Length: 332
Image (cartoon, rainbow, N blue to C red; front, side, top):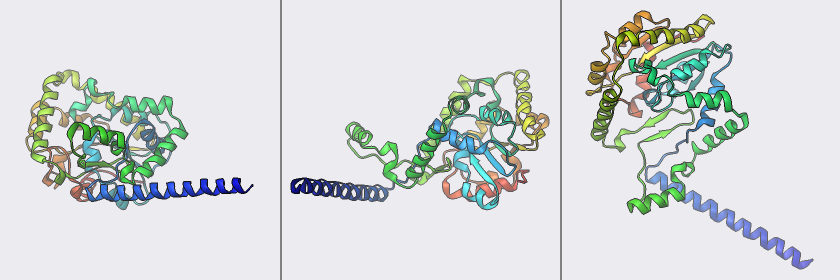
């Protein structure tokens, strides 16, 4: 009996020591990572996106849903929108590098949805080749959605949004592999993802000039590899968008199509391949939903885009305020 009691106490003491050592190790690791400039960042995957898509859908005219790609993710201040529309439920469904028409279609087909949708896109997004870029996430939500898996993903994202070491890119196996390849510890990235799925870009941590050249060259290659279709083939795509926006608007919702800024040669490249007066202005004329170009909003072209395409996080609040002052949005 005495031996059993001794073994139980020894076992309990060992576990207490293990927990304390682990807690202190993680505490000092977290502090070291933050001292090096790392910030918490949430991993995005289909289950987490599906959680946000679930919350964005359904009835309720107090919902503001944001659709788009990287410009929307980096340029939008969710804090500014929540302050601006305190009674509204605001949802970010942007996906990096993916035009959003698949998600717009998903909301259009949700017969209960009557919220407001802001869709960030450009003329290229209407090309058939780019129409389904977000379809894999939409399919996961519509055909493989699991409430419990999505809830688990959301709870994990809360954990990741609070602790730097919870970022999967900072897991020990990945750090060891990185060190083995580069012979040094990994540097902090210049982007981090928030709990609301928006992305914070800190361009003071990166060579913005090199990044500008990269974005310009990548966009040029994209236009050369996938040139615009003939205008007579592109114009019918507007009616395809109208079919979606009409569904939402006719049942009491609102939709705004938005062209966010590019600069430093990037805009000239965009306008060379998809001239505004030829493409976007025709979209404005034929669109069932209002379509707003950044050149038509006073002050929106005055912001610096360090990489030609995205905002530094320090400018997001003011940019978002300027942007939404120029949009025809009145949340109910």
